[in-house]
Image (cartoon, rainbow, N blue to C red; front, side, top):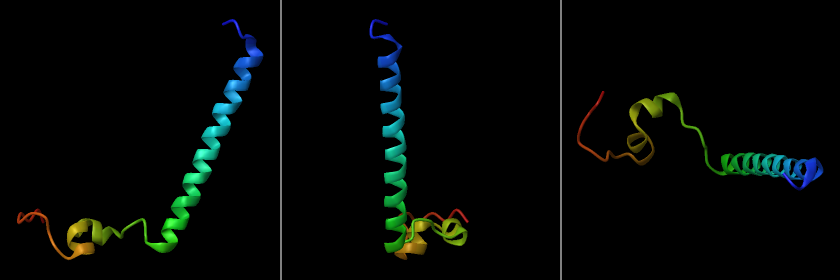
Length: 65
């Protein structure tokens, strides 16, 4: 209100810049993590259940399939 449009534009640019930085940094960390361990599982593993496909065990005795 009292800072004028110039101050608002500076704040808008900073918010936009911080958002772009956060997106790029997060994307780079996700790519780096994917090099070490896969981030996405296959559809078959997802349908089987991640407890069973990744850990080889189930948390509950109930079979939904």
